[in-house]
Length: 386
Image (cartoon, rainbow, N blue to C red; front, side):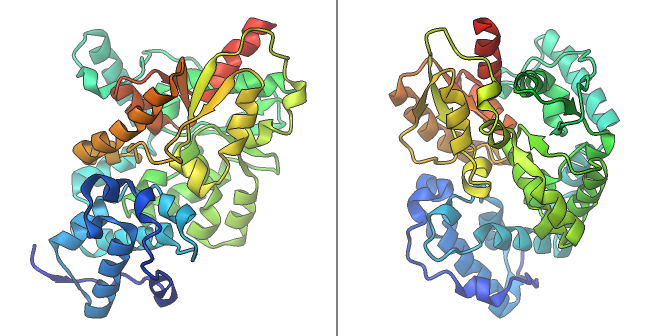
């Protein structure tokens, strides 16, 4: 790729906010793996500055931008509050609009996520292939049922966001979450198919126009003022950022209604049945978009502690390498990042691991880790003890 003209459009104050102190480096999974300066947050920001100054980029620039997991661990570590996540999203959107950064086949793949009928059909095909043992074991997909059955609403106290891939492949997790919410005394509603996809993967890919279209659709699916609970960390982070994405009063108001389901449960724990069985030791893998974007990882520990002995991993919340579609598009780097996480899990010496994000669940399972959603554990122990 020859050098091409691109206007990134990043705010100059944001670009100047990074003082290259290096405190982000230990928290960047791609830098930890490659030890390349341009694969670090400050290195990528330096490339962004250069691109804005010259108005030109090359293939190396595109590759370093594309190789970012977008875990945003650097934001948590940064004392200057550099908004790296929004800078990366702006960069990728500029690349998607002005270059061939996102080929047509990928654009269609992302578009399918917002089309429930096509996604359901594709999932049924995968289910058949799975039953015939024709899928590679390294994919570590959950058992995908041919027939899932509907999610049945039980009231109007709270909404439960169901999403795209999680609803197509992991609806039993939604059912477990629903049972826990109901045990806390609330009735659960489900949105219609307008909320088929939150648009998180589209934002990561730079497909901003499609992400905003999905956001507008999703907002229409949740009328009223009831809280919107989310059991997927990536989806929850995206819904909470609709205000920034759409920059409208309605979007900001919508985002204020969104809570990770554990955030809601910490205020309703007393309504849950008490635990009586011996508490198993369970390690918690914090999804990046719960820890660094929503900053709501502590409620997971509080909720779990009612039923298990939670074990905190010793890696300070380092990314597992899933990154939405990242683990498929950058398989080698994602696997190398995951190995660090697996090492931390092995040192914890636990019976099981939990993670509140479907991408993390699938990626860790592909690495041989036994892992479930936190509220699946709670649901099992809650029903066992009653």
